Image (cartoon, rainbow, N blue to C red):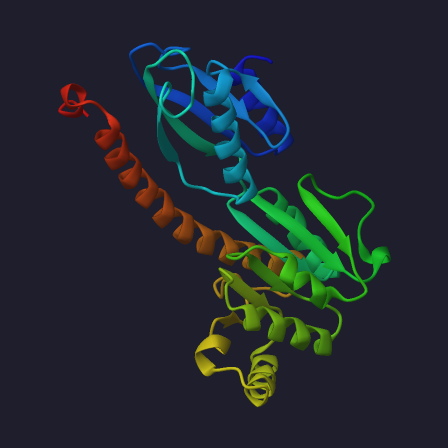
Length: 283
């Protein structure tokens, strides 16, 4: 085990998500005092909140949060004697804070000129990027940190491997493949963002073909094509990439800004409920 501050810094540098567990309230006899912290990753822990069944339960909760990619803070109250079978007999409140979780899960289909300009931009953001193509030769030798290269002869199969709320960017070398990817993504209809590279003419053609396949207009309307910020002009790959990255940033800032505001409000209310009455008036 090492100092939790150092552990957080190292994990952040590695881009590895974790959960910071903090004792925020202690009543009676407890293994450690309020303010004690523990950092939990999928495979390791750093520091301790006292060991025993309490720590085991805390690790289990933290790893469930990591597995589900939860962005929500969480409060749990434990009676150490009754519920956990520990001899201390007191009670404690734990705060679970996800750290280092990417704000957006992004699938980029296509490793052509625009893809090679776009992916480094996305990699510099708080995102996790899966870069997908059937042609290994199209990928650069060096990938940006945090980018997963996926070579699949059937790129459409990768759509189902993304979690709900993902971002999809389609810019392959093949219009038919673009259409098949579009159909699969719209079929899921659980994405935060879907952008398809192309002109308005391409959009009209795709809308017609998607209607023939039975897709409802309100679902098709969620597709961004042409994608990118209209204010960013230019046809160079980097200009197109900057435009697309700007739209992705605007989308996740709006979505996660609302989520963070909700989390802050709900966390404050939950803390107030868990605190004893003598302290609740000060909260």
